[in-house]
View 1 (cartoon, rainbow, N blue to C red):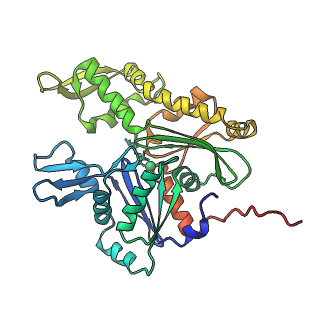
View 2 (cartoon, protein in one colour; view 1 turned 45 degrees about the vertical axis):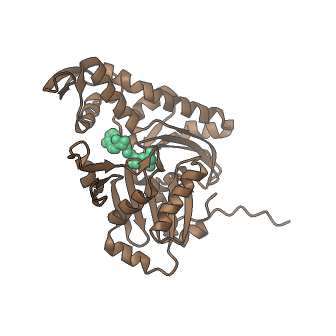
View 3 (tube, rainbow, N blue to C red; view 1 turned 90 degrees about the vertical axis):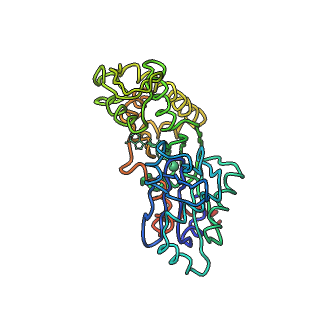
Length: 345
Ligand SMILES: Nc1ncnc2c1ncn2[C@@H]1O[C@H](COP(=O)(O)OP(=O)(O)OP(=O)(O)O)[C@@H](O)[C@H]1O
Ligand SMILES: [Mg+2]
């Protein structure tokens, strides 16, 4: 592994601060936080009113003195102070007190593939503010591959695709390291945005955020492939009058709208395979692509990828928590280190 398992084993807790959700794993206690990366602030007093699930519910429904903020943008912590306050509340007093009792608190965090030094610094500073004396950073692709049980240590190619909210990361791994990888700035948020924009342009309808997921499900049946229902009824607000109205939406047209962002993902997969040695590509063609991340649950995405690439596609058992569970497995020492020492003469 490119990460030091020895150092990770000494860490007390691990965090995965994503654009959509924040997850925290505490050694010995397991996954203790899996909540939206959202905080609600009273702008008059600057005090925090809510974090996580409750703050998410407030989005789009607040009076003027409450501001709902997301301290993480495009997978990078952009507001360190707010991220610290959010994490403190999500972890809770009891757990924080037990962590602070550790003599030299150590933390691990996963960062997106090719995160720039500034983004890495922001993650480290956030955790130092929570009391960590030392922070280990792990590439999300490695953490997720370990978390979904891929045989990353073996000398054979495995392909992992982390479908997050802000980005999709694709890599071919072998011998515990990344051979080739791409980070495509298209994720679940872009797909949701494409659906909302389509309804606005084609039907002059504003779609409340809670209606996006049911529409995605309506596209299924057979997912993003053209075998589902031909049309579905959707309720929203008329763009000009502001009044509630329902329209019959042609599912094929919505599918087309979604294809645009997904084309970038397909390009990324193509690039990773082109840059990869042929033996590893042959392994990937045999074993297939493993999809993890919350957006792997987008109905029909696996089928669409299978058709476009001709490679088998699998979805991990709990795709949304693979990265943090991978970090957890490394903290608990459940991963055997790969020793590539020079052979004795
Ligand atoms: N059942 C589902 N169907 C479709 N999309 C889903 C489903 N569940 C979650 N998602 C999408 O998955 C995304 C969240 O995934 P995930 O938790 O992996 O993101 P994240 O780790 O916060 O983001 P990133 O890694 O990009 O920073 C959201 O965009 C959400 O809309
Ligand atoms: Mg993520």
